Image 1 (cartoon, rainbow, N blue to C red):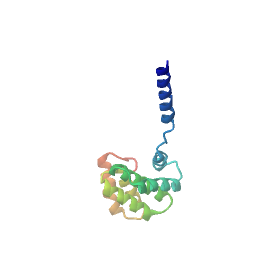
Image 2 (spheres, rainbow, N blue to C red):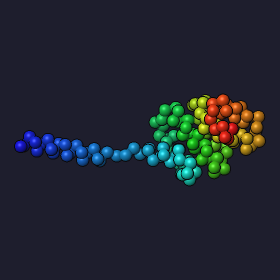
Image 3 (tube, rainbow, N blue to C red):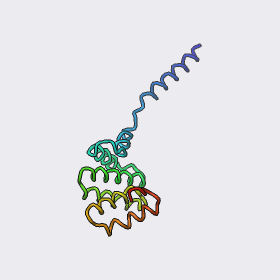
Image 4 (tube, helix red, strand yellow):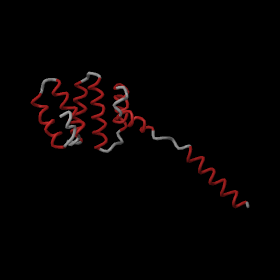
Length: 132
């Protein structure tokens, strides 16, 4: 009986410890950064915190930069947006989200000759055909 009680206490202690695990602090930031319905300022903050943490693979880093670029664009900060789109494309030249963002900024600023190759690349990739 004493052996059974020891095992029961060990299992109970393990369950208590497992339930005390801290959630991933970056999970909410990742969700906010990627969610277009979150306010742009909050997305900029969430994406920035993820970038500052620096524990991402290149593809995730590029996607985070592109997400922040769109948030900057929504807050009428085209220079910051373009900087993030360029950085994202430097990490992942095939990132369609960053290509679209860069193309939109360039087109909005009247640089159609620079936006056209990006739009053509998106069409070739089969991405964002409704916006390219």
